[in-house]
Image (tube, rainbow, N blue to C red; front, side, top):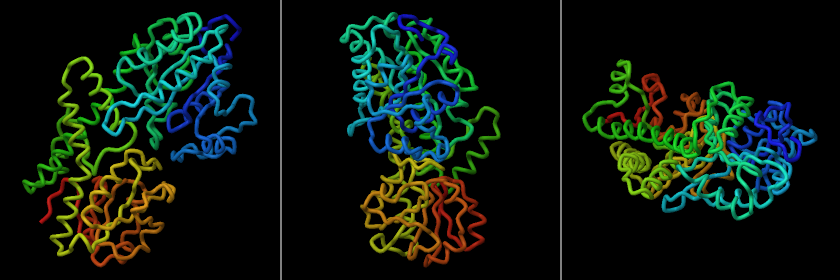
Length: 450
């Protein structure tokens, strides 16, 4: 793209250089995706360990799908740096994929968005036109409220020297059917011409639908309510999983019966909701609703249900052990899985941690087997098990994460390591009838027990 000119085609033929700020679970596959599509890409991250790994063509994140996909920095088209300023000075389109966590009191933490924007807009070359796109999950209004004052602070002119847009990430780590190359995208931008140009740009990344939806706030709201809706739906089945066992009814039998109706949407209960989206994003919507003076009662209630599930499951486990004649202080429980979702080595916001803490508070020892997670990243309070079939003395196994390695264990061998083989299916994915035939005492979330 020549100096002073603005291209709205955003194709490899016009040679836009793409920058990605934040090379985590979203940013890295996004950067690789655009590189594979023929763009020159600059990636930036503040983590020295991430930078070193990428320079050595090692995968620095827990998504195994990227293990053999890291390009070589010997290529002119693939550049990795720790300097946002270096990236900003050369890139025409900058995608920001930094974390948007919550604080200890469940308030949105926008410090990463602000910091990235501050450094980007401070170093933009005014002789060129740069488009900066936020992909991180935020509530409606954040892109405008956080970045527009910075644009003004550094004397930039929107529409001439810089434009801002929002395109929410929808990447689903560990899901081969919904990679960055296979998910629909929406573009929010107050400059309609840039918005349509970004549609053409993102169509080089994904084979699915890409559309311009209007102003920034529409795209921001779309992203946050996608995860709010899932949190509410999951909360419903989790609450039912607490109600029906008290009636001596298995919630899965009820859900299977209800699913025979054409418009019933089936969800599955579990030990809790994890990850960097569903347990976090509702708080962004709750905060924004509070800002405009509107209650978010349903969203708040759903979050409370899902957040309380680990403690509920811990109490059920204690009841199981007590009815088996075991005292909490002398028992050991083996967790099968620790990460927040199957086939991903990501422990962020995992329900396994509060579940372990709730059990430990009751005097129960916790061991963990998870082949996807580096043993050094587990809390010191748990014992890490490399081979569950050689572990000894556990009174109950709990399926926390439905990794294939956990679901397809050698259950016969595992049973031999336990005084009495007991399994609690926290994901409702095991064939409990088959396990019962092998001698296991089977329990599960939402399933009554005597």
